[in-house]
Image (cartoon, rainbow, N blue to C red; front, side, top):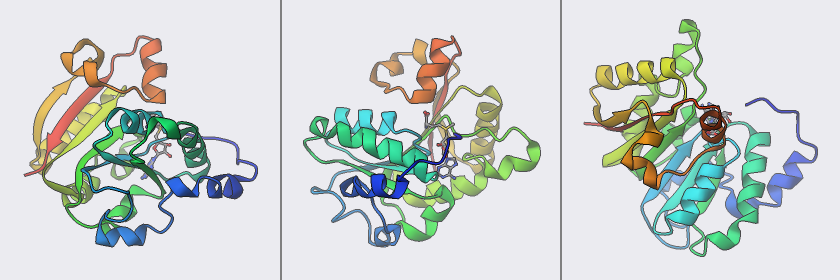
Length: 217
Ligand SMILES: C[S@@+](CC[C@H](N)C(=O)[O-])C[C@H]1O[C@@H](n2cnc3c(N)ncnc32)[C@H](O)[C@@H]1O
């Protein structure tokens, strides 16, 4: 997601500091103290402008959500949008991290997450860039370590190339593909779906959405 540098980005992010985990090293001790109440923790990686994270946190008050985005100007928008929706979250169950998924392993307590979402991750189509794809086995190793036993990785994408690659990586990694579809919006599972910004754009154009749910053994 490219965007022009935000004016006063740092000040705007600071104005949403109640939603931001500024020093992710504190997560080495887990999520106690981050939220007012201990609940299952779900993490979205690459949250973009944050519609999914805000929507899920409003819909599932019994879950604590953490949204990770590596581009600070993009996360600034997500933070501001989430702040504008504070009243929808009486349980105060949403936080953001500005950072790269590759740094989660050394900073987040192992086996502290119940679910990880990858929504419309950058496809990195050149084969030389495969290691940058968020479903490359290098990242799967990180997710396996972050998830609790029985925890689930949920993927959505419009990109068939990335989806095929992801299914191959899951199998090669020995993960269990619990469920998958190449047309999420035609399935019963869609009843509980919260759309992301990219998902809305693609589905408005008639592009089917691929999805998979995966468990690590
Ligand atoms: C194509 S956008 C999709 C945004 C949003 N999930 C949606 O569906 O509308 C992918 C987002 O993932 C972020 N991203 C890519 N690689 C990342 C990484 N390694 N760690 C954290 N965020 C990442 C990008 O900056 C971008 O905002």
